[in-house]
Image 1: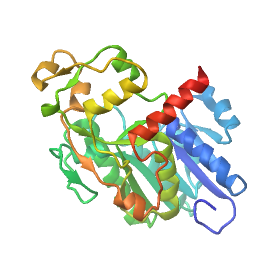
Image 2 (image 1 turned 45 degrees about the vertical axis):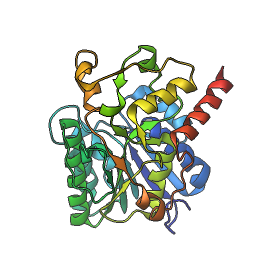
Image 3 (image 1 turned 120 degrees about the vertical axis):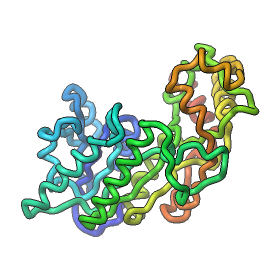
Length: 311
């Protein structure tokens, strides 16, 4: 049984029903179909049929509307929280609403989940000037987007300590896969940084992140953080070059940092201000995950095969 419990049918709640959630659902369907009942929280009722066909039981709810979350109370043995924070502010109100809904059953004599896994971001580390880091690195979020993730992590860990629910945190970097590559960026000819100004970026294939979520449900420790990154060490422009070469596109022009301000958006520039090389020892040793795509080269080879099969 993939989630590591000996009880009967497990109720698994997926919150944040996007691409990675679909990949998780496929893994669950192929591994534990007789022993797991999977619920997927959706905001859009029009997507319910597709998720039902994929094997999930849709729940129409919105993390921005606490009144819509009452059905989550006492529902799940295990929770996979993949939903991003709201787009504004420094606090993750969505995570607070989710925890309030999950806690409602306890207040009325019901049960809480046994384990909650949250997918955060490696952006919480801020700029590390290219240093090699692990999960013990002090958090130094440098923008509101990352600050909201730090807030979510703290709220979740506090809740876990208070309630006894095992909360495990996965910090993921840039997620890629076939269909999730910067092809449009390359087609537009947007520039990258010259090598002396470039930053180290980190990557994880979407399938490996999905597998890490299930590994965390099986083996993740309480209030333990795991970096979900592959084995590669790539500078950002080198990553773009690899994607361009794989799909027969021109490599991006390279400019000095001072020349990019008038060309790229503030959001695009923000990703070029942080450099870090993130280790994955805990992922491999504690969660015992064997990466299907240990390098971007392996992931791109798969994307090329998929592209050839679909053409």
